[in-house]
Length: 218
Image (cartoon, rainbow, N blue to C red; front, side, top):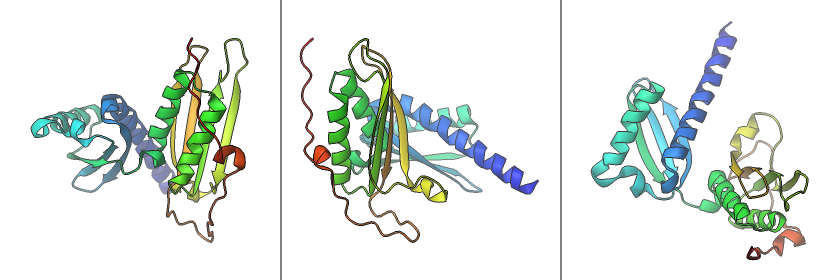
Protein backbone atom coordinates (compact mmCIF):
# COMPACT_ATOMS: atom_id res chain seq x y z
CA UNK A 1 0.00 0.00 0.00
CA UNK A 2 2.80 2.43 0.91
CA UNK A 3 4.62 1.73 -2.37
CA UNK A 4 1.43 2.42 -4.31
CA UNK A 5 1.01 5.77 -2.53
CA UNK A 6 4.62 6.72 -3.33
CA UNK A 7 4.18 5.68 -6.97
CA UNK A 8 0.95 7.67 -7.24
CA UNK A 9 2.65 10.78 -5.81
CA UNK A 10 5.55 10.34 -8.23
CA UNK A 11 3.16 10.19 -11.18
CA UNK A 12 1.23 13.20 -9.88
CA UNK A 13 4.46 15.19 -9.52
CA UNK A 14 5.50 14.34 -13.08
CA UNK A 15 2.07 15.36 -14.38
CA UNK A 16 2.23 18.69 -12.54
CA UNK A 17 5.74 19.36 -13.86
CA UNK A 18 4.60 18.54 -17.41
CA UNK A 19 1.62 20.89 -17.12
CA UNK A 20 3.78 23.67 -15.70
CA UNK A 21 6.32 23.17 -18.49
CA UNK A 22 3.61 23.41 -21.18
CA UNK A 23 2.21 26.54 -19.51
CA UNK A 24 5.63 28.23 -19.33
CA UNK A 25 6.49 27.23 -22.90
CA UNK A 26 3.43 29.11 -24.11
CA UNK A 27 3.82 32.12 -21.83
CA UNK A 28 7.59 32.51 -22.27
CA UNK A 29 8.05 31.62 -25.93
CA UNK A 30 9.44 35.09 -26.71
CA UNK A 31 11.95 34.70 -23.90
CA UNK A 32 13.28 31.48 -25.46
CA UNK A 33 11.91 29.06 -22.88
CA UNK A 34 13.91 25.83 -22.70
CA UNK A 35 13.00 23.92 -19.54
CA UNK A 36 11.95 24.18 -15.90
CA UNK A 37 13.32 22.64 -12.72
CA UNK A 38 11.01 22.24 -9.71
CA UNK A 39 12.16 21.48 -6.17
CA UNK A 40 9.72 21.20 -3.29
CA UNK A 41 10.68 21.86 0.33
CA UNK A 42 8.50 21.96 3.46
CA UNK A 43 8.45 25.76 3.26
CA UNK A 44 8.58 26.75 -0.42
CA UNK A 45 8.46 25.46 -3.99
CA UNK A 46 11.54 26.55 -5.94
CA UNK A 47 10.88 26.92 -9.66
CA UNK A 48 13.90 27.61 -11.89
CA UNK A 49 13.08 28.68 -15.44
CA UNK A 50 15.78 28.32 -18.11
CA UNK A 51 15.49 30.79 -21.01
CA UNK A 52 17.67 32.51 -23.59
CA UNK A 53 16.50 36.01 -22.59
CA UNK A 54 16.04 36.35 -18.79
CA UNK A 55 15.18 40.05 -19.06
CA UNK A 56 11.88 39.27 -20.77
CA UNK A 57 10.87 37.00 -17.91
CA UNK A 58 11.84 39.39 -15.12
CA UNK A 59 10.43 42.55 -16.69
CA UNK A 60 10.90 46.14 -15.55
CA UNK A 61 11.24 46.23 -11.79
CA UNK A 62 10.32 42.55 -11.61
CA UNK A 63 6.72 43.18 -12.70
CA UNK A 64 6.60 40.31 -15.18
CA UNK A 65 8.02 37.66 -12.88
CA UNK A 66 5.79 38.80 -10.01
CA UNK A 67 2.71 38.44 -12.21
CA UNK A 68 3.92 35.04 -13.44
CA UNK A 69 4.46 33.84 -9.86
CA UNK A 70 0.97 34.87 -8.81
CA UNK A 71 -0.57 33.29 -11.91
CA UNK A 72 1.18 29.96 -11.31
CA UNK A 73 0.25 30.00 -7.64
CA UNK A 74 -3.44 30.20 -8.49
CA UNK A 75 -3.41 28.04 -11.62
CA UNK A 76 -1.50 25.09 -10.14
CA UNK A 77 -2.36 25.55 -6.45
CA UNK A 78 1.31 25.92 -5.47
CA UNK A 79 2.08 27.00 -1.94
CA UNK A 80 4.64 29.82 -1.69
CA UNK A 81 6.25 29.49 -5.14
CA UNK A 82 9.59 31.20 -5.69
CA UNK A 83 10.62 31.62 -9.32
CA UNK A 84 14.19 32.23 -10.37
CA UNK A 85 15.42 32.73 -13.91
CA UNK A 86 18.57 31.19 -15.35
CA UNK A 87 20.08 31.96 -18.74
CA UNK A 88 20.68 29.05 -21.08
CA UNK A 89 24.43 28.50 -21.43
CA UNK A 90 24.45 26.60 -24.72
CA UNK A 91 21.40 26.49 -26.99
CA UNK A 92 22.88 23.55 -28.94
CA UNK A 93 22.56 21.36 -25.84
CA UNK A 94 18.97 22.27 -24.97
CA UNK A 95 16.57 19.67 -26.51
CA UNK A 96 13.54 21.99 -26.61
CA UNK A 97 15.46 24.79 -28.33
CA UNK A 98 17.00 22.34 -30.79
CA UNK A 99 13.59 20.84 -31.52
CA UNK A 100 12.05 24.28 -32.08
CA UNK A 101 14.88 25.17 -34.47
CA UNK A 102 14.25 21.95 -36.40
CA UNK A 103 10.50 22.64 -36.50
CA UNK A 104 10.99 26.17 -37.85
CA UNK A 105 13.54 24.99 -40.43
CA UNK A 106 11.24 22.25 -41.72
CA UNK A 107 8.41 24.77 -42.04
CA UNK A 108 10.72 26.87 -44.24
CA UNK A 109 11.26 23.89 -46.53
CA UNK A 110 14.78 22.81 -45.52
CA UNK A 111 15.66 19.24 -46.56
CA UNK A 112 14.85 17.05 -43.56
CA UNK A 113 17.71 14.55 -43.76
CA UNK A 114 20.42 17.18 -44.28
CA UNK A 115 18.90 19.27 -41.50
CA UNK A 116 18.93 16.42 -38.99
CA UNK A 117 22.45 15.37 -39.93
CA UNK A 118 23.90 18.87 -39.57
CA UNK A 119 22.00 19.49 -36.32
CA UNK A 120 23.14 16.31 -34.57
CA UNK A 121 26.69 17.10 -35.69
CA UNK A 122 26.44 20.51 -33.98
CA UNK A 123 25.09 18.87 -30.82
CA UNK A 124 28.02 16.45 -30.68
CA UNK A 125 30.53 19.18 -31.58
CA UNK A 126 29.34 21.05 -28.48
CA UNK A 127 30.34 18.18 -26.22
CA UNK A 128 27.24 16.00 -25.93
CA UNK A 129 27.97 12.39 -24.94
CA UNK A 130 25.03 11.14 -26.94
CA UNK A 131 22.15 12.49 -29.01
CA UNK A 132 19.12 11.27 -30.89
CA UNK A 133 16.79 13.09 -33.26
CA UNK A 134 13.60 11.52 -34.59
CA UNK A 135 11.34 13.19 -37.14
CA UNK A 136 8.09 11.45 -38.06
CA UNK A 137 5.45 12.53 -40.56
CA UNK A 138 5.20 14.09 -44.02
CA UNK A 139 8.90 14.65 -44.61
CA UNK A 140 8.71 15.04 -48.38
CA UNK A 141 6.66 16.89 -50.96
CA UNK A 142 2.88 16.86 -51.17
CA UNK A 143 1.48 13.42 -51.86
CA UNK A 144 4.39 11.50 -50.33
CA UNK A 145 3.73 8.94 -47.61
CA UNK A 146 4.56 9.65 -43.97
CA UNK A 147 7.87 8.21 -42.85
CA UNK A 148 10.41 8.46 -40.06
CA UNK A 149 14.02 9.61 -39.97
CA UNK A 150 15.98 8.58 -36.86
CA UNK A 151 19.58 9.60 -36.22
CA UNK A 152 21.43 8.44 -33.12
CA UNK A 153 25.02 9.05 -32.05
CA UNK A 154 27.02 8.34 -28.92
CA UNK A 155 25.72 6.64 -25.80
CA UNK A 156 22.01 6.76 -24.92
CA UNK A 157 20.78 4.05 -22.51
CA UNK A 158 17.47 2.51 -23.54
CA UNK A 159 16.21 1.21 -20.19
CA UNK A 160 16.63 1.51 -16.44
CA UNK A 161 16.86 4.46 -14.09
CA UNK A 162 19.82 5.88 -16.04
CA UNK A 163 17.41 7.00 -18.77
CA UNK A 164 16.43 9.81 -16.39
CA UNK A 165 19.88 11.29 -17.10
CA UNK A 166 18.83 12.04 -20.68
CA UNK A 167 17.28 15.42 -21.46
CA UNK A 168 14.35 15.16 -23.85
CA UNK A 169 11.84 17.36 -25.68
CA UNK A 170 9.05 16.86 -28.21
CA UNK A 171 7.54 19.48 -30.51
CA UNK A 172 5.45 19.53 -33.68
CA UNK A 173 6.21 21.18 -36.99
CA UNK A 174 3.56 22.16 -39.55
CA UNK A 175 4.96 22.53 -43.09
CA UNK A 176 2.52 22.98 -45.99
CA UNK A 177 2.52 19.27 -46.82
CA UNK A 178 1.59 17.92 -43.35
CA UNK A 179 2.47 17.71 -39.66
CA UNK A 180 5.83 16.39 -38.42
CA UNK A 181 6.59 15.20 -34.91
CA UNK A 182 10.11 15.96 -33.66
CA UNK A 183 11.82 14.31 -30.71
CA UNK A 184 15.27 15.35 -29.45
CA UNK A 185 17.25 13.53 -26.75
CA UNK A 186 20.63 14.71 -25.46
CA UNK A 187 23.12 13.36 -22.92
CA UNK A 188 24.85 16.40 -21.47
CA UNK A 189 28.66 16.72 -21.31
CA UNK A 190 30.10 15.24 -18.13
CA UNK A 191 27.13 12.97 -17.36
CA UNK A 192 28.27 10.04 -15.21
CA UNK A 193 26.90 6.58 -15.92
CA UNK A 194 27.52 3.64 -13.55
CA UNK A 195 30.19 1.27 -14.87
CA UNK A 196 30.36 3.09 -18.17
CA UNK A 197 33.32 4.99 -19.59
CA UNK A 198 32.36 7.14 -22.57
CA UNK A 199 35.12 7.67 -25.11
CA UNK A 200 35.26 10.25 -27.87
CA UNK A 201 32.53 9.78 -30.45
CA UNK A 202 33.60 9.53 -34.09
CA UNK A 203 31.07 11.03 -36.49
CA UNK A 204 30.09 9.10 -39.64
CA UNK A 205 31.33 10.80 -42.81
CA UNK A 206 27.77 11.46 -44.02
CA UNK A 207 27.04 13.46 -40.85
CA UNK A 208 30.43 15.15 -40.54
CA UNK A 209 30.07 16.55 -44.07
CA UNK A 210 26.38 17.48 -43.84
CA UNK A 211 25.44 21.00 -44.89
CA UNK A 212 22.07 22.73 -45.00
CA UNK A 213 21.05 24.10 -48.37
CA UNK A 214 18.59 26.95 -48.60
CA UNK A 215 15.20 25.85 -49.98
CA UNK A 216 14.35 26.89 -53.51
CA UNK A 217 11.89 29.78 -53.88
CA UNK A 218 8.31 28.59 -54.36
